Length: 183
Image (cartoon, rainbow, N blue to C red):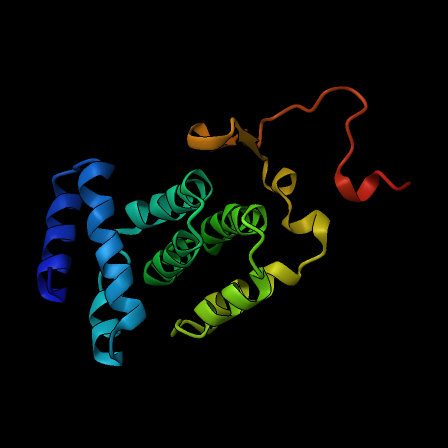
């Protein structure tokens, strides 16, 4: 699938509200083209960021889960590239939440997250998003770990997933944030 065809198919799929089984393979291809392509190819792909915002964010989350399920470090890179394509379009916090699960998955796979996130950040034309990606692995542990984002791991192996507990999550009595535990 060539770049123009992939972009057209993604736009059509988003407008038709098709599901992940149709959209994710297209995003896979666009991430591959973005990673390997020229500056002109990247510009074409970046133009779809706002149109496909929700599927690109969902793909970032899916990639974090799929990386662990299949023990595939390449999925971490693809998830990060999807966030670059999305570009922090409306609210950078949405991207940062995906960075948290991608970072956690990279750690579970024993990857050098500083290197991977830094290498991918260099592909971004958005300086603010690039800095968030590059710096995320170097945040203090209590600000980059899953509980800080109200997220937890569920299951193991092929059933692995992340669960968003939402901001209304009420921790059990006596529960403390990781950075509060040493007190």
